[in-house]
Amino acid sequence: MRLRGSVALGAVCAMTLSVSGCGGDSGGGGGSAGSSSGPVKIGLITSLSGSTAASFSPSVKAVDARLKAYQDAGGKCASRQFEVTTADDTSSPAGTLAAAQKLVQQDKSFAILEVSSFFYGASQFATTAGKKVPFFGGAFDGSPGWNKVDNNLFGVLPPLDFSKTYATAGQYAKSLGGTKVAAVAYDSPSAKEGMESTLRSTDAAGLARGYINEGVPFGSTDVGSIVLGIINSKSDVVQFGVNPETSFAVMAGLKQADYKVKALVSPTGYGNDLLQSPTAVQAAQGLSFTAAWKPTELKTPETEQMTAALQKYAGSKSGIPGFGEAMGWFTADLFLHSLELAGCDASQEDVVSALRTDKTWDGNGLLPVARDFGNATAARQCSYYVKLEGDGFVPEKDASPLCGEAIN
Image 1 (cartoon, one colour):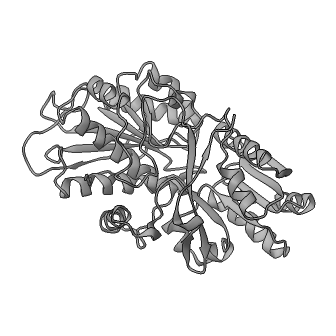
Image 2 (cartoon, rainbow, N blue to C red):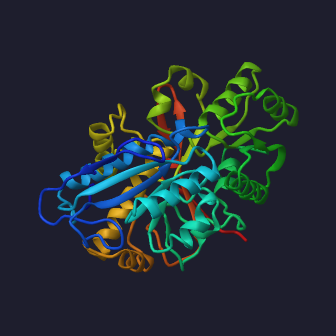
Image 3 (tube, rainbow, N blue to C red):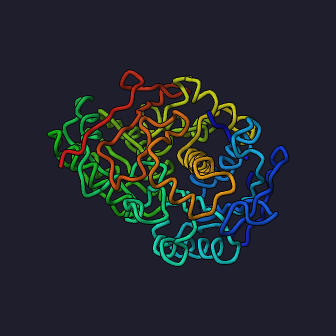
């Protein structure tokens, strides 16, 4: 079993921080991990400024925690030295492209991790001019490149095909007695396509469509019209495709109006950050969150290992990772898995080739199913559901993942 360490904050002209192993071979960035005496250079693209910084900047410390824990645990490639350069996507497609260009062309990164809602702005560059560099990402931005098996992009989440309909969301809403669904999503390709897929799922489960708003500005808390739209449509299920600051504002508005619903579901918000804010805890009571990994509350050996590392190396009080933090953790873990798979001194080509045929990575047992990097789309969608009750999260559905098949 693998555990993983180091990163430093910075903008596009980022600072770097080296993480030394226990001695032995020293790595080199660029074309081969072992081609020179320098460290293995890793680039990290995420939001350090702009509308999505609050949600995704924690990924920096999470990457740091994964790498440090790996080296402390004496992983197969723990003798290597890693150097991470963080580049700010500025919460924009153009900023993401600039960050990717710098990390590839200027910094000569051996591999790049990305935790960004705007990676679609850099995906074409990554698979053309940057095609020799393996990219490891959350794959939640909607870039079609994540759904291909002939390139250098590897997503930690199964590459859901938004043209398909998965039964998961509809099964969950129907199980709670929902009859009409309201949808609130950001004005971005991934949020819109994901929400449309969700709505087709609730359609298939027999729920009617109520208020639909898929043009919300990133980070908006001006939600008066959204709250009125939900109430006037008489929706009893609310599906969010927004970050916590927006969903919490909507929830607060519904509570103020004393409007009760059967379910409110958010893909983000589960994690330590919410619990550290009394205002957020109060606002999010009864909100259900989806998680693509085992919730910390299950207290399995895998979750306890992750919790301990985040507390020790990332300064997390609860050890419960938020979405951005979890994506940082898993992208670092997948990179290390690929290095072990291809060889600690492997070339970039070796890493891409070895991982593309791999079917064994499951985030050290934290993901419900192992990833198959040779398959373009996932046959089913699996999510854990947790609900905020009191000052903590409670796993739902008997603490098991709810897995829905592709139904079209």
